[in-house]
Length: 212
Image (cartoon, one colour):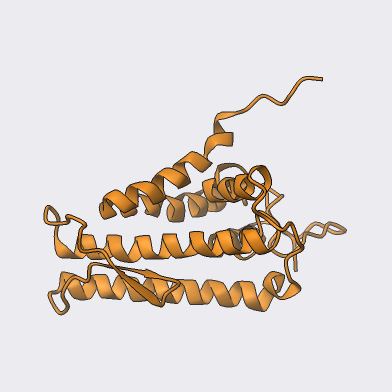
């Protein structure tokens, strides 16, 4: 019996690992994370539904490899409250609020109302000094955005790893803010199909979600 031939898209996890690693050596690489924000929305708005989640999401692949291949996952069912609407939408609102707060801080540095803070904030709480990062070649606001954005990307990766270890490998995908946004776009673009039900947070459909 022939094994399934690996495709280029099966190695998207390398990009996620590379992004997190490069950010440790040069915080300015954090700007590349904007691709992870814009591409899923563009694909979904163009009619691709949740194709990014299913095919191109390197973080989902990375968590799957860590949980399945490295056997770091307990492989337990994710609690119902994490799959609920109130939690997924609430987490999306919280995540977007933190994103807007980060943009506001960047603006304050841009307008010279605030000094650059060379710190990485983990889980929106723990501030890790990052003074060894050389950002002298760019404007302070450019560096500030990089510190803030990398903090968000690293935090979401940590949350993904924690839920991967506690539950099933890709449990993060259930409440991922980007997945929730593309799901909302898909529900707005496609009418529900009678008799077809999707689980909340499901990422198995590439053309749209009809979950209630």
